[in-house]
Image 1: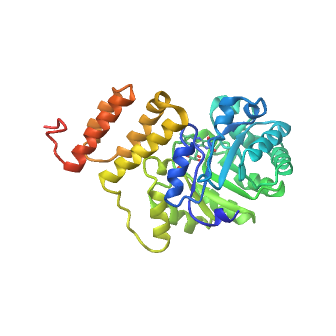
Image 2 (image 1 turned 180 degrees about the vertical axis):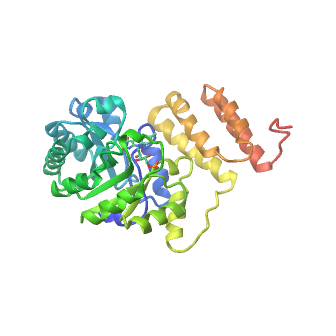
Image 3 (image 1 turned 45 degrees about the vertical axis):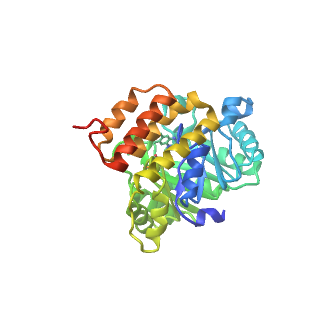
Length: 327
Ligand SMILES: Cc1cc2nc3c(=O)[nH]c(=O)nc-3n(C[C@H](O)[C@H](O)[C@H](O)COP(=O)(O)O)c2cc1C
């Protein structure tokens, strides 16, 4: 797991952490990227839709495949399938609070069932030769913070690292991540601890490393529309505080590159539908982006969306408000 020793990692994010997004993050120095969570049941049923989540390429290395499930045997079998498909690491999801997932006893529900969690981890570790990591929450609820116990279980079961999203499952994404939990976990295990939660700026990453002594940091939402953040974090680690967004020409180039890759992956129709959110993230905070967002929201096909995108970036590049219809 040399890769974990380098820079910041890209979090597994459903509907987001696909091949194009991972490749772009890597091009800015992201050291390790994860697939979105993949159903262990879907993998063992050989469901094509599920297998599609494993699509990867030579540039997409090292790759962590995250699986979720609640049955140790099925999880082991699924991990083996993912490893045979080329996963460099298997990550077990013990943090997803979505109803559909927890009602099957998977995801964050495992924070309430440490004994089963331990059996799942052991079973996966025994099934594959690649490293196994576990992604947990701080606990199920504020009254049951048990990240330390879960991390120790993971260590004893043979996991090589634990990622702590320092919020409780019942918090969802509300409130702040409590980084003290990451620090507590770091003090209690000797495997690697990856800190996660609320890194939106490079300084947050450095602060998390310093305040918690965690080994690495993982970014989710902070990388949306801002893959450059990985480069900024590496620079900041060496004392360079430069944190400037690239010029509009380069942002536009990046959007078009990602869009093209999305099209190659899932076809033009699906890309136009799924890619809009990335465009909105890329343009967040840019001059008069509200106007662009409104217009983009009304486009349903690639041609009209591309047209709006080009018009908006022409405006940014030339800074000609009248041309863009802003009076
Ligand atoms: C849209 C979205 C989808 C997510 N999907 C997953 C997932 O599939 N597996 C997982 O372990 N966490 C998932 N997460 C949680 C992130 O991996 C991460 O733990 C969380 O966003 C906190 O980190 P952040 O503050 O850097 O965003 C998701 C988060 C978001 C915003």
